[in-house]
Length: 593
Image (cartoon, rainbow, N blue to C red):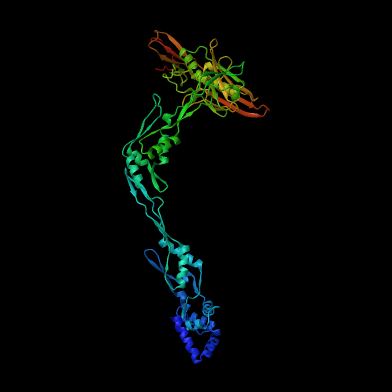
């Protein structure tokens, strides 16, 4: 209808002869904005673009002071246009207004329609996206809320589940687009806020699982237990509650036992479950060069802490209250199938001895028993030999008898007397074999057994667990096989070392004796069990002295490998007598009760 009205009007004008006026109107508008054009309701029609730009600067130039309402969740914000980087581009806006009605298909009827109806344009604004982004990112601090995952806590021994809660986050980039559109329409902008769902949405299942787990004790068992094995082990609900924690799988909470605490608990069981492997023992056949097993090897076992933890966690996950511990086999270093060729043991590298002629039966027995502990033993390359460790417990239960030991001014009787005969012989083998001596102690007083058959003082080594030990290191590339033997005819204890000779050469000087001291007078002690008037010497006098033994160990090329000095400072020992009733000891020394 409107178009028809225009046509009627145009027809009337034509009929009235006003066509000349239309030409004049178009001529007048040639450099002006067509009347009826407005910018944000500011009329600019009839103005040249420069004039319109000036007017827009006057009327809309305070746009920077304006605020734009930003609608967000729960509240709105008035954002200063200046903070958003908004600027009016007046000249470009005026030129856009000038282009209205000048399309290639627009004619005088369109201009007439523009005059009658008008057209309101949006201004052209400059939009500093970086400034707006900074503003929105700062605003996000008031909007963003992290999601809250569902969780499980243990209050005492009661599991409590908390529900999940979604979070939200301002979508800055999409909100920038909405903001720019709002600027053009003089409207408010709706900020775009995204919901962030919680990753873990369910803890109720875990709560029920924890409640069932804490309802009764949890038991650890050994699969196929041997007679005498420890166990089973029971974890009370209170212990379980202290170890209980959670893990996330997908969007679910899972109940587990805290790995560090579980591992710490399992490690308390390792000592009672560990059975060390037993290496085979061998003799070396000098004729064939082969090892001859004299004692079999045996596998050991150990608690596999990691696998046991997995077993327990799996039981917890399946709602079970019993889990097997996992044991692993520990093979021996030297099984009874080992060969000399495979180990690199090729020949005897040293032989050392000592004599125990005249030893009382208890001492004789102890020497034989202790020596057997070392027969067939293999010391790995780089391993340090510890006499006390290999010997083990010295006690009556371990089979040792009482015998004399050096203890102060008078010999004493103790379980295991004579064991130092074995440590002394081992010391001599390591000394002559050129092995580095890590620990060696000399006796408080000289012992006659250790100076038999040509040995002087300074070639002994005492042991007394746990304080005094004899230790040396196998520094050869091949293992060291120790053989012990007792030659009955001579009461001779022998240590033989078998390994691979690396050509080292050993020189020993000494003993060099100094600081020799005489003992004080004899000690007399009344013994009511002796015949009246009799006296018996049971401890001979022995001079004290310092003995120096020096050793040089050379490599095969003649360069010095080790140089050692072993100093032994022996205290003098007084003679000691026991006498029966009626005997009058010499008056010079003071008798001891």
